Image 1 (cartoon, helix red, strand yellow):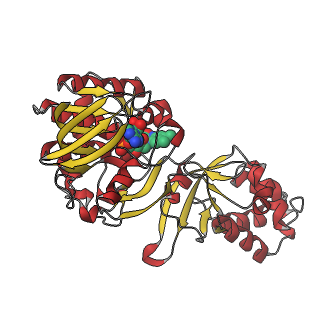
Image 2 (tube, rainbow, N blue to C red):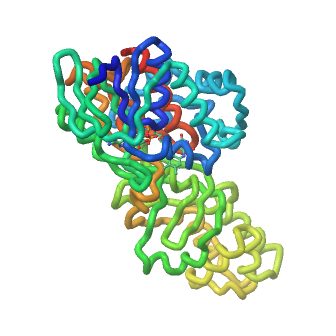
Image 3 (cartoon, rainbow, N blue to C red):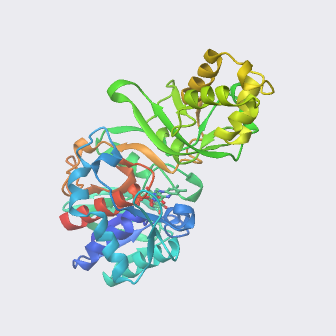
Length: 397
Ligand code: FDA
C-alpha cells in the first residue's frame, strides 16, 4: 500500500495543473485517470490549437447558481499567470478574436507543458487507472485502484463534465459528491448546437454550411442575454459561436430571437431601394444578406422575389425587415452531450470553499474544474477556470 499527500482523480486540464503545483510545493502527489490517452479535451480543444485562456476573463464570463463563487480563484490566478507559464516554456501564442488566446504550436504543446510541470513536481501518474473503491479513513482517504491500494490525506476530484462520453467523460465526480451529501446543480449540455423539429427546419436545411454574423438573444427584460457572433446553419438546426454561446443561457421551452442583419437598418435600406431602383426584390435582398439566405427567406415569406421594388407596399417591406431583424425560433432541444463543449451545472458551490475548493461536508475532499457548477462562456474561459480552480486548490492544500 502506497501513501501520498494528495491523490488527484482526473488528469485533464484542472487535474494536471493542480498536481503540478502541489508537487512543486513539495507534496507527494498521485495523479490518476481511467482514460487510455492523456487530456483528450485539451487535445481536441480550439480545433486542435487550444484556446487556452481569455485575456479578459472575469467573473462576468461565467454561469453558476452562485455567481460570486468563482471571483476569488480567478482573481488569484488571472489569465496572465497562465500566459507567464507558456512564456516560461517558450511557447508562442496568438490572439484570434475578443481576447481569445490560441497556442501557435497546437494543443499537444500545452499538454506537454503540463506533463513537464508535473515532472518538475515529481508527480506520479497512473493511467489508465480506475478507482474501484473509496473509503474515508482516519486522517484521509483510502482508494482501491486497478493498480493497487493507496492512501492520501487529500483527495482532489478533477473528473470534468459529462460532455463527449466517448473520450472519457463520466459522472464519477458527481456521484462521489452526492455520496458525501453535496447538492448537485442539474447538469445539462452547454456550448452546444441547437436543434428544431424537422418540419419547422425543412425550409432551412438547404442552408447547411452557411455562416453569417448575427445578434442572438434569449429572455426578456433584465434576464435578456444577447451575443453578437457568427451563426452557422446545419442540417438539423443552428450552430456557430452565436448559438453555442446562447445555448448556455437557453432553457427548453424558451424562444430564441435572431437578428439576421444586426449592423443594418433593413427597413430603411429597402425603402430607399424602392425609391431609387426598379430592381427585383430578390436581387435587392441578396445585396443585403447572403444570397442563399435571401432566396430561402423570400420563398417562405409569400413575397414575390421577381417583383420590382416599386410594386411593393411600404408596409410589406417594413414587415419583411422586421421578420429578418426579429426571427423568432423555438428550438426543440440540443445536440446533447455528444456535441456539447461543456457541462452547465455540477457540484453546488455553496458547499465548497471559494478559497481552496474544499468540501464543507468532508475535510480533505476538493472539487476543481468543470465538475464544479462554474461554466464559462465560449472563448477560453473554461480552461481559465480549470487553471484558476486548480491553483486555488493546490495552494490551499
Ligand atoms: P477534463 O475533461 O479536461 O478532464 C477530466 C479528466 O477526468 C479526463 O481526463 C477524464 O478521462 C478523467 N475522468 C473522468 N472520469 C473519471 C473516472 N471515473 N476515473 C478517472 N478519471 C476520470 N475550453 C476552453 O476554454 N477553450 C477551448 O478551446 C475549448 N475547446 C473545447 C472543445 C471541445 C470539443 C470540448 C469538448 C471542450 C472544449 N473546451 C474548451 C472545454 C474544456 O475542454 C473543459 O472545460 C476543460 O477541459 C475542463 O477541464 P477539467 O480538467 O475539469 O476536465
